[in-house]
Amino acid sequence: MNRETTIGTPAIEDENYERDRKRRRLALIVGIILVIGALLAAFYLMGGEEETGPAGAQGASSNRQAPSVTVIVPGNTEIGRTIVTSGTLAARRDQSVGISGQGGRVTRVLVEAGDWVRQGQLLASIERDVQVQQAAQQRASIAAAQADAALAKNELERAQQLVERGFVSQADIDRRQATYDAAVARVEVARAQLRQTQASIGLLDIRAPTSGLILERNIEVGQVVGGGTPNAFRMARGGEMEMRAVLSQEDLANVSVGMPATIIPTGTDREFVGQIWQVSPVIDPQSRQGEVRIAIPYDSAIRPGGFAEARIGAGATTAPLLPQSAVLADANGNYVYIVTENDTVARRDVTIGTVDDRGVTIASGITGGERIVSRAGAFLTEGRAVTPVVEPAASEMPGAAAETDEEAEVR
Image (cartoon, rainbow, N blue to C red):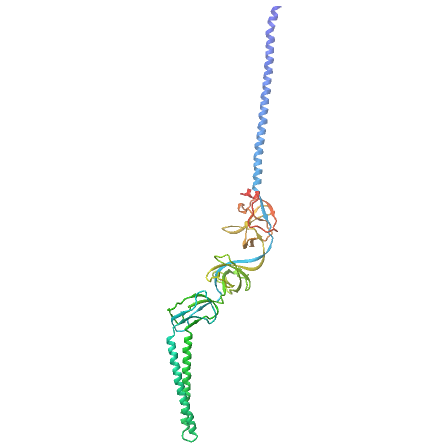
């Protein structure tokens, strides 16, 4: 009995050991399954994040590819047309005062450059001793001719008294009449010679042909000048000045006599109000330009030969007006960017009219109904998608405005 009990105990222990081993194996398998599940869950989570990341980046990239830009629909504005040009200052009537006599040595010069003179005023004198002696000789010749004429007259009168008594023939009377007539003629010849000499003496005085301003003095005392010397003096008639501006054929068609102009001489900030008094009737076939002459009242700051800028008020025109920041330029010329119906950027070449503080007038290239990129256009490329933000066009357009945050993103 005791033997049986001793023999059965190891069998029970083996059974318990086997049961515990199965339980541990099951726990291990469950643990492995749980670990694998956790790994799979982590893998799927990480995979989802990776998929979400590129999609999010693509969305952000898409947002960056379509930045917001400010656009303006300019319409058409009535703008005062101003033609800006440059040219030279000159005397409106530049007169050369020369020597019309025989010439000689200059004895007196009575004026300087910058002096105002009146018509007929003596400017300079030339030596005249020879002419004075000739005049004295001719006066003596006149006296001698008058004496001969008086004698011939007396003889004629006596002969006429004797012819009635028959002492003198009619032929003798005719001879005496001819002698008297010849003596009278010689008197007239001598007088004419004297007047000629006096006139030549008068030509040795250089006088102002009109009232005006002396611009140049080209002779000095003691200088020997010849007859016909053309430029002893230069003067501006009445002191009247002008600006001679050169305009293109297109601009020339928009100006006319009487239009006002503002003249600004180079080197000064002073402005002078002038008026167009002559428009060239011809166009230079080489340059396709013509000259406009603008009358300017006298002022010491207006110096003939100087350079100046002119702003000519040439009426009004209707055209699109853009801020200066909207107009770009490259080697192909001026252009703007417009936003199409598909919200993409397109280049449009334009021709500039005038440029001033208000903005840039567009002469051709747009109608005014387009959506024009007003700022940051230099950072765009043609065909790029944008989000347009319309800016009101009724207000005055500044020449340059600060960029928005969205426009800064374009760069």
